[in-house]
Amino acid sequence: MEGLNQLFSEFFSTVGVVDSIRVTVIMSFWSTLIASALGISLGLLLERKRFPGKRAVIRVNRTLMGAPPVVIGLLAYMLLRKKGPLGDLRLVFTIPGMVFAQVLIITPIVCGMVYSYAVRTAPAVRAFAKTMGASRRQTNRLLLREMRQEIYFAIVSGYGRSISEVGAVFLVGGNIKNNTRTMTTAISTLKGAGDYYEGVFLGVILMLMAFVVQTLADRFRKEATGDENL
Image (cartoon, rainbow, N blue to C red):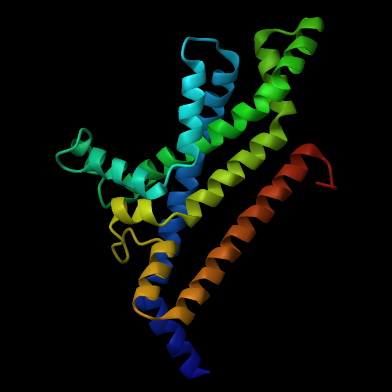
């Protein structure tokens, strides 16, 4: 038993597992929160407004939904580096800098998903609200209520991308032990050192974290809707 405890102690200290979990939780929470707020707002706005070049904007957003994260990470690094436009913020090799890169990656995903849902749902909802004499604010609240399931899945998709990202956070964060190393970059580090079993073990922890978050989110959603079959 003592030998097992020593093994776990050495493993956790070698790659900084505890700190990598902390960094992953903080980064995924704030990046998902910010990207969801931006993506939902932009998706609904894009569906509602009519303006020249709208089709081009939609195509660009869809392209960004599938853009390689490492490319977005490189762009974020160039913006945040000392000689970059945002260099004065000094966000390179920091958690806020990693959040910035993640927001650039996740926002188009949430925006595109919400837009696609809104295109199918919003016209009927607005027509119904108009016949009922609802105000604009009431109409928007009704639309959000009707789309709550789709919005929920968009947020979960964004969260899934956040916790699984490697390339972008590696470039912007630098994979610094006990500082900006996430669980995914720790797994990459273990793989590079040939510690495959340790990497798998850390991957299992990451999957358990995702499972717990998903379970809690489902529970809150059931309580909000009152539907036990969800």
